[in-house]
Image (cartoon, rainbow, N blue to C red; front, side):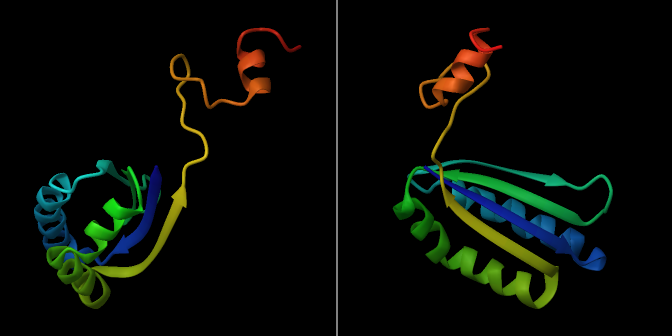
Length: 119
């Protein structure tokens, strides 16, 4: 699994157009085989600062997304109009577990601690 962390600052006067473009892109993203999910969050301390976190099954899904013509057009708009700045981080997931279920990939010491086996 691959996680995408996209941090960005949107020009205040471009916010409506950015949101419209983002909504349109979401429809394309949902159609990509291997896409899992994406969510966007806005900073409570700095309006206009966002982070989007997306999950993909594999590099093939990321490549399909990256090369989608609608995404390439949106990237160009982001660079030329929407974003003051941005940072993109793509990373392979080494662990993925929850607080109560699916803990197979949790480290042994973590599992022991949460079962009350470590003092």
